[in-house]
Structures are given as C-alpha cells and as structure tokens.
Length: 215
Image 1: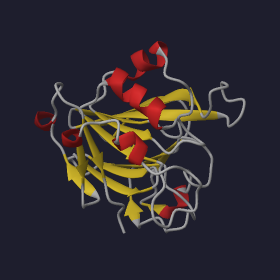
Image 2: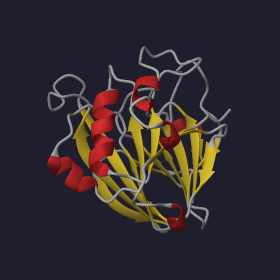
Image 3: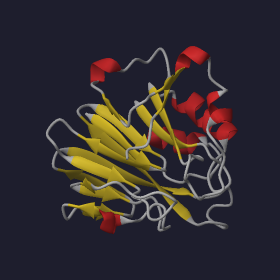
C-alpha cells in the first residue's frame, strides 16, 4: 500500500489493487489542495479545512458518518469521537476512520480533541499506522498525542494538523511532539509518499515519520 501526504490532515491511501481513499481534503488553508482522484473520500467533520470533497475527482463515495463498509476490497470503519474535551460542547463531533489495506491497519484520527480513554483505545486497536493531530488549539496537543501513541503502540506514527510554511491556521509546529521521542525514532522524510507492506511493520519499535507535503 502507498500513503501520500497531501498536506494539513489530508492523505491518499492506495491499495496494491489501485483502490484509493482520500482522507479530509482541505479548502483554502494558505496553499492549494493537490489534484487527486479517489474511489472513496472520508470526512472527519464538516469544517472547510477537512471537507473539500469537490476537489477530489473520480466521483468517489463520500463517507461522513459512523459506518462499517467494504469498498472495492478496502475495509473502512467510521468511529464517533469528539472534537473537544467537553463531549462536543465546544466544537462538536469528530469521526475517526480506520482502514485495512493490504493487511495493514491504518487509523486517521481526524480533528480528535477528547482526552485519551481506555474505551476509545479498545475500539481503535489494532493500529499499525497512526495519523495523529499534534498542533493543539483545535485538536489534542503534543502531550495528549504522545499519550495516544503510548497506549495505541502503532508501528508508524505520521503527525498531521500542525503549523507548516504557508498554513493560515494558528496551530503549533510539530517540534514539541517530536522532541518527546528519541532521535533514532524520528525520520524526516524528504518526500510526500511512502510504500508499506505488512512485513515492513514491527511491534517492537514505534517510528515517527514527518512527511513533506505533496505539491
């Protein structure tokens, strides 16, 4: 399977069969959404920086509610969570999406804002690749994100929803999150795409991969 980072909280996930899912396509956040085609688009919540489904070509199926689907061989589960620590009282609900592609369990946390709980962790497991917001202010912050990582124990963590060059949103850079890991656990990837198989994953070590935004 391939993971391509399109920017902000948006990724495309492509199974070896060619089936492609795009997560949280963004509107005008200071830079443009790359051109991309998909069979499925998932939307964690209805904010402009996560719900620009019109930017994705291919007449994809749009998933924006709790669900359990299998679309063209890809298993997809939408799980209700909250965008804040007051059960949605401040910013509403958030959908977490889990995917199984080529035997790899991928979890996109969307704009998760709620504190880490045993019940939510149990719902999410197992997770091989975790896409997690780390910029705070509108989501969990770096310390909360580290707690999620420690309890989920994925093989790979990909930070998202953090301050980058050109981004208009007032959120934090990923530095404080990355500083919580040993130097050898963090990889600064000078590319927007990685390719993984089940054999690439290990349960012994968690690696954090900071990816470059696709242009």
